[in-house]
Image: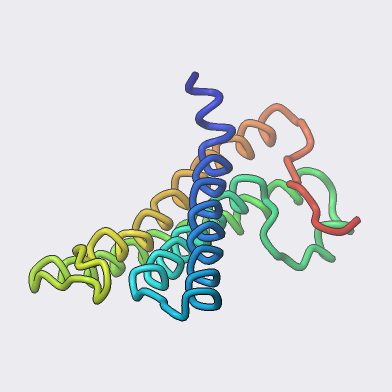
Length: 168
């Protein structure tokens, strides 16, 4: 079960938020065009679903090494150097993600302290602002997994996982 969660957690979450986004947007378009009425809560649900979708998608891209990168250098080096470059890139990204995670809690803390709520849903903004720290926490988790995999591949002499390519 843990393996299934590890492999598919982001996919399930992305499917959930994408479905909520599309259904809410479709309902709001029908309400606006057919009934000449729209609600503020529909716009908020779509906006916050999209924000969660982006952050979970970023973690998924890190997991699959499907994020955008310039890999010209990777094609001209050997497998050990390639593994070292991937490890270096992951370490740089990890340090940035840790710093961003730390600073992202400030916004959540201010919202918590002052009790700010959304305009339409009247729900605490903390739930929606937590998308950023949650996204960075997922990115950090996936980077740590990637680093462990890369170090294992480097030590065992296996070719490093290069990820999925968007265009081949």
